[in-house]
Image 1 (cartoon, rainbow, N blue to C red):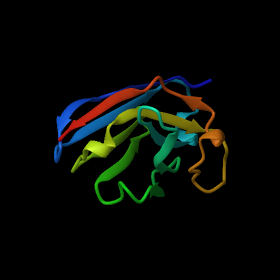
Image 2 (image 1 turned 120 degrees about the vertical axis):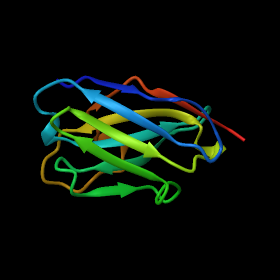
Image 3 (image 1 turned 90 degrees about the vertical axis):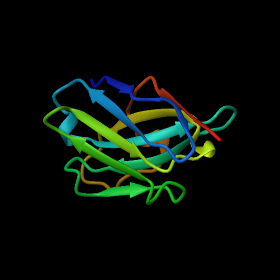
Image 4 (image 1 turned 180 degrees about the horizontal axis):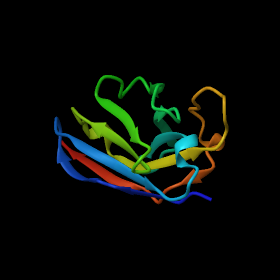
Length: 126
């Protein structure tokens, strides 16, 4: 079992930056791929970024590529999402998630992730 707790959300002006953190409990964190998703009001939960267990592979949705960076520190059981150049359309609740599957490509699909945090709200004002 893995428990995930996000932090770092808040209110920021357009063009600003935030760094989200996701702290994980459990000994298996370092073997899981991790993902960040977001859900805007009235919309579905969408993929943002994912990182492999080692950090050697990452993937981003097109709308954030070049602005957001996903990283992880397995010694600290934490995954990060550095968000730069924030836009009002980035406003959403951001969730981190863990994928227990081994030896498969990074997933963009919510259903393949087994554990989820409670989310942290990011609001970008124009």
